[in-house]
Length: 303
Ligand code: FDA
Image (cartoon, rainbow, N blue to C red; front, side):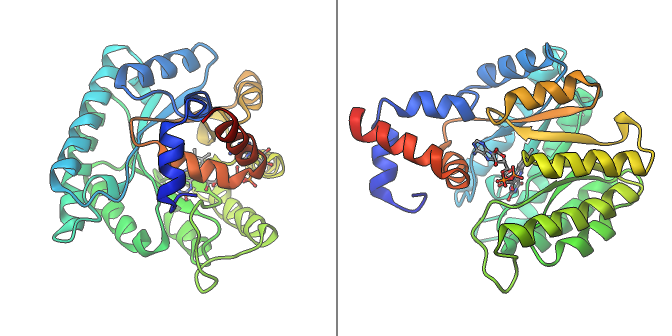
């Protein structure tokens, strides 16, 4: 669905899209995203805001994305949501230049640095999202460079990649923030586990490394079994509630998000917003065939 122009155009035009999109996407403007972060705050949920967009091949677009993040961070600070990292931002390097044909890595690093400066001024943090496996090395290199000036910059590691357990070992050091997720891209067998069982086993091995380490693990999953295992591992290693956190996506298992926050653990919600919601929405659909059927039925009847 994410590659089909026909479906893309049907989805973008259909009236039913709006209600489905708004379940997973916080709106198109900075104000709407900030309002959602403020609302989540009333139930003790932390936030990580993502300005949607990826694979930018236009320099002006990459510059504009950097500027939007800076404005977003200023707005979070103005609304008193950013202090002590309560609301932070998540950034895809391909949205700020990594995919540009010339000097992509250098431009992405410069733009990410500007976003980190704005985050530091707001009193909060930045986490680098992880995209498909061809970008992993370059993203981890940018992370290393950013962390020299901003040691709180976090990274995402994807349990479906064969390499990730070793990456967890490298990043399980003091001060290092690692968001562990299963992984959302279609990856070949040569680099990634293919079955749910193998991905889940890898997730647990990675969790064990992160929870035993000195860093700050961020358990990004809606999977009840993995959430439970994370809690057990945190207890086994005597971790205090403020030494790790759970993370879920906006609109997914909201009751569970509240339950975790209510029991005194840290729960951060990843809040995507912006006009470029199509790719993000299709990844969420792919994870839940039931969602896709509901959505397509709506398209067929109302679209
Ligand atoms: P899994 O997909 O097995 O789902 C477990 C259960 O969660 C399901 O049985 C269902 O109950 C519920 N659920 C899951 N998805 C649902 C949906 N769409 N609608 C309704 N219920 C659903 N990926 C990546 O490659 N790079 C990245 O940078 C990030 N960043 C990121 C940040 C955060 C905070 C999170 C939570 C996730 C990501 N991801 C990501 C996405 C991640 O890789 C993965 O695709 C999704 O989290 C789904 O995997 P689960 O671990 O939830 O398990």
